[in-house]
Structure formats: C-alpha cells, structure tokens
Image (tube, rainbow, N blue to C red; front, side):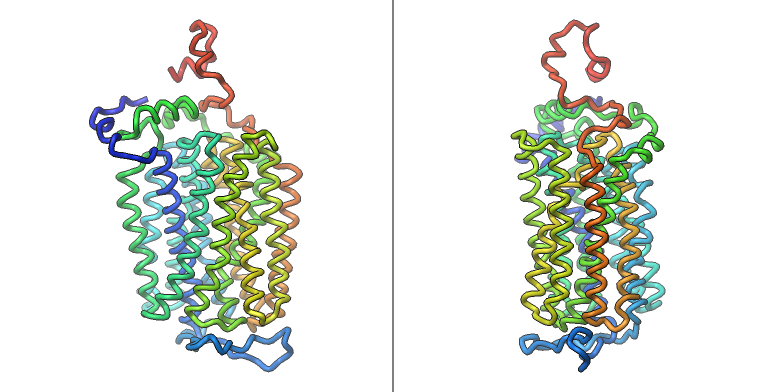
Length: 497
C-alpha cells in the first residue's frame, strides 16, 4: 500500500464530499455521457430518413394521424432507408459494444478502472463528433462503421465501473451509491431524447452529435484529475476516509494480489447463469425502448420532433426516480433484516420484469390515445428502474474481486440483444404499423417473464466460492482481531497489516 503524500493530505481538506461520493458522481456522469452519445441517433434518424405517411387502413394496422396540437410535424429527411436498414444502423453500435466487455473487465481488474473507463468514454466522444462527417461522406455504410467504433469504446464502461465500485463502496452503501451510478443510464436517456428533440427542432442534425461528444471530452478531463482506481492510490483522499475504506473493503494491490480469473468456476456457477438470464431479459426490454421508442412515437403516433423528444424522455424520468429510490429501499430492507441480500435482489428484479412486461403490452392496445400510451410507457419504464437495486448489483454481491469480469460477461451477453432487437424490430415492422409493433411488445413480454422466473429461482446475493479473497469478508471484527496475538490472526489480516 502506497504512502499518502503530504501535499495530498493538505489538499484533502478542501474537499467537502468524501472521495467515494465524488467517484460515484463522476461514475454517474460517465454513464450519463455514454447514454446521451448512444441514444441521440435514435432521435436524429427520424429527421434523416423519409417519413411514413398516415394510412386509411383498419385502425389496428394503421399509422396514427398527426395530432392537431402537434404543429410542425416533420416530413423527415433525404435518406430513403428501409425499416430493416434503420434497424441495422441502430443495432450496429452493440456489435462493437459486445467485443470490448470482457477485455475491459480484465484490464480494469488488473490495472484498475480509472483509465479503462476514461479512455473508453473519450474514444466514444471522438467518434460521436465524427458521426455527421461519416453520414455526409459515406451514408449508411460509414454511419454503421462509426457506430461500431463508438460501441468498441463504450463497451468498457460498465465493467470498469463495477471494478471501481467494488474498490470504493462498502457493502452497506452499495445499494444507494450503486443505484446512483447506474441511474446515469436513465438520466442520460432523458437528456439524450429531450435535448436531441430541442436541438433537432432548432439546428441542423449535426449539432446533436457535436454537443454530446463535446460533453464527453469535458467529462474525461475532469475525471482523470479527480478520480483514482482505489483508495490506497488516491493522493488527496482524507486519511480518515482512506483508513475507513481499507478497513471495510481491504487493500487492493491488483498487479500482485489478484489471482488469475477462475473462468471455469464462474462459467459453471448456477447463480451466474441466473444473472445472465436476468440481464438478457432486462436488455431485451430496455433496448427496445431506448432504441426504438422514438421511432414508435414518430412513425406510429406521429409526434413532432420536439414532442417526440419530450414524450420519449418521460418514461426515463420515472425510471431514474424508481432506480434511486429502490436503492435506498433495498439497503433499508437488508440493514433492518427484513430480507437478506438474495431475496431483496430477487424481489426487485421480479418487480422490474413482470411490471414492465404488462404495461408495455398494454400500451400497444391503447391505440392512438397518445396520453394513455405515454402514461403506460412511463409506468413500464418506471418499474424497470427496480432492476438497479436488483440484478444489476449482483456482480458486486457475488464477487467483489471479479465484479468487472462478472459484469463484463453478463452485460456483454445481454448486449447481444442490443444487436438483435433493433434489427428484429425493423424486420417485424416493415410498414411501421400499430399491429406490427404490438407483436414486438408481446415478444418482449415473453422474454422478460421467462428470464425473471429463472433469476428468482436460482439467483444469489451471497459471495460465491470463486471470489476467494484478497478482499476481507465484511463480517470480520477488525478491532477484535487486532487485539489477538499475532499467531492467532487470520492470514489475510496479517497480510493487510
């Protein structure tokens, strides 16, 4: 463990917030930036492509008429891209996103999460700002390539953050700080949809990509100066907080102490299979909404650009509120002994799967009643926020040492649905009609329910055997152990002292 420099101790006096809270805030902003850069194309594509016209067919199969309140409904853009091609464009991001998950987790576990996260976000920001140039020069082909490259950069985000949280957040603060960090996805989706709608209404589409890419670069500069991979390497953390975190979590000297990744034990672990199943269910429903809800609003409900941005963002406002609130509730339930960690994660995951499945299908039966559709989608995504106090925290519960690898495996496999679902939606909705979209939501209903049942049966919130230290178990009474003679101390405690 490195000695803290005197200048760092002096500098620590100027920080009001604990460094673990600052890290959580910067982690929140990292995911926020990642999502704004990811989702802004879902809004921009509605002004890039030629727009579908309303039909006079049966109401179940028709596209809704534009509402009288929707002044200035867009006629679309100049690109005649089919629904299938649009699905491929929107899914191409996840092709790159999948590839860097496991390498990102391994790099973060070996060398710490700071630079793994920072470089990933920076590269995504650069390619986001290059997106308008790619569209102008190469159309859909270059756009697909650019989106794949963006995904390669962003694929390290969640594995690196899992490693950072495992190194910085004590078990009894994991629910609220973990939910805060992961809640950046909802806030990023809100900002991405809402601000994209405003910018697309006022400026050329390219402004959206320059704005969100620029924010990513600004975040990178601030993050590399404020944040470090673990408490023992942070030069200007308060000594009291440093000692507290080392006592609660244990020192993490990654290059020397971390054993090789126990791949066989991880890949044959039953709770791990349950976690992957839940991640697939979450991502299937979530990516349909994140990637294609703006298209549903524009193509089926005929919202204007500005209204589309507003109403597409409302479900994620509710999702963020629920995700943060459920984190506090989960911590309270565990702390009071109302439920153990395993059952708390199962309850939150079940609520986040069965509820959205029902309301998503219900929205498709609301027809062209725009108010009811928005309300049902808002409830749907609000309930999905409970995932962030459920299965999203399971990698940290199951293995603090290999949380990055677990997150990489689960998030990487789940992200395959990000490739499948937008393309599948494009194939299933060639006419962008209400009846075609209803079938899309029924498929999502089945996936959400089946995967949630698997998780609720076999998931675990306990540390798994493959974790095997060097992180000290949280149940050890450190003060009592320190009072014991040297020979009676546990080996891990002797090493840490």
